[in-house]
Structure formats: structure tokens, C-alpha cells
Length: 317
Image (tube, rainbow, N blue to C red):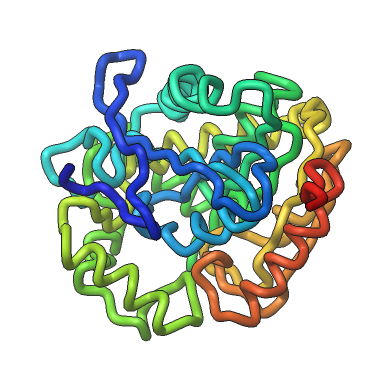
């Protein structure tokens, strides 16, 4: 199958239909043989990402005894694209992501998990959507780890109020399907390491770039004004009084001290509002912690193992 990711062994990769009948790509892997299976990990990627990019992470989860289920969000990877220009990230409203995640959980994760425990590992936009899910459906996951969740976006030199006003005006003037300023120039097929905003690791950056060079159709450059407006509405929704306080699932929220995509201070403050949240910050990390250098990643996995082990212990031999 074109676009099927390979991680040590071939996954079960297939396409499912969203509520509106549009195609979504999903993939699953069994846990490695050792240690004994601990449960299922739902892996949710960030904006512009795709399944293949998480090959290393999937191997690491499987070695920890977790079967893995993941998907390409609507508008990303090999899932349906909303616009003819496949480089544009576009969505009408974030509830479309909610619906797609609901179908994924119903058709893929629940049958796969059976009676086993289910945890979630989510990054950035994926972590934002996971917060929406955990607010709507309590106790679906035994625990969750959220990396650099999209709580508040960096505006890169613009005052936040001005960035919000520009987005609103562009959308209301009918430019919802147009690029946000500067995003067309961030095509990952042509991006140089020195201009990237998400990782300090040159080798992992090169590996991700090689994947889009091999299959350019899976890439995204950046959002439209329509996507940004939808994101602003959703960020306001999850920031509303009482929203975070109503999420009961135990979770670890991980902040990146050098994040240039989301505002780490907002992530830190949000974690304080969630009743059962533990906050952990890696001060030297850029936004994509799972794509960072070995030192940053080692710190993340140590924290992951200690935290998740409290809820899903490693089986004794």
C-alpha cells in the first residue's frame, strides 16, 4: 500500500471512513514480544505531521510493552485533504477532528484494546484534541501524556491581540482558504535545518525531510486563515473557566522550555488547572520533544516511564 509506514515490521495499515464518509488513514502495531503486553497506546500527532514521522517513537512504545494505534488527522498525511493544494492545512472547525477521533476510537482502538488498559501519548495539536476528548468522555484512558499541547499559540513578533484581529479580519473577508502569512515558504520539502522552529537535532530533522522527499504528497507547509480561526475558537473553548477543571483523567503534561510554536507559560498554567495533572518541563527542548536530541529524549522517556508506570506497571517476568 502506498504510504504504508514501516517500523521494524509492517503495521496493519488501512483506511477508515469519517462520519462524513471521507478517508482517514490509520495504522496499528502489536507490542514487541518483551516485555509482556501492558496495554494499548493511542498516539496522536501534531499539526502538519504524519504516521511515518513517528517510526522511532512507535518502536520505543512497543519495546515498553504497548501495542500502538495511530492515525493521520483529516487534512494530513495520507488522509483526505480539504483543499486542492495539498500543502495547506485547512479545517472548518475542530469538531471535525473530534468526530474523526471518535470514529478511530470506535472502529480501531476499542476492538484492539479489548480488556487491556488504554493510554494516550499526544503532541501539540494532537494533545489539544485529546484535551477536548477527555473533557467530553471521562475515564476513557487510564492515563495520558501530553507533549507541548496547543493551549496558546506563539505569534512570532506580532502582539497577540493583533494576530487575533488579523486572523479574524482575513477570515471574515473571505480569505479562509488562503495561506496564513509566511506559511507557504515553510514547505518541509524545501526547509533547511537552520530555518526550522521545532527541533535542535539535525539528524532527526533530516530523516523527517527525507520522508517527504520520498513521498511529497504526505507533506504540509502550514495553515490557512480558516484553520487558524478554527484553532482560535477551540483554544478559547478549552481555556474557558471550568473546562480544564472538569477533566478527571490522570495526565502528565510536558512543556518545552524553548518552544517557538506554543506558549510554554500557558501550558504550565493550564496544567495547574487540571485536577489530576502532573507538569514536567524540559527546559532545553524545542517544540517537538519526540524529535529532539538524545539528551532531551532520554529525559522525556525517563519521566514517561516513571509516570506511566504508576498506572500501567511493567509486568513482572
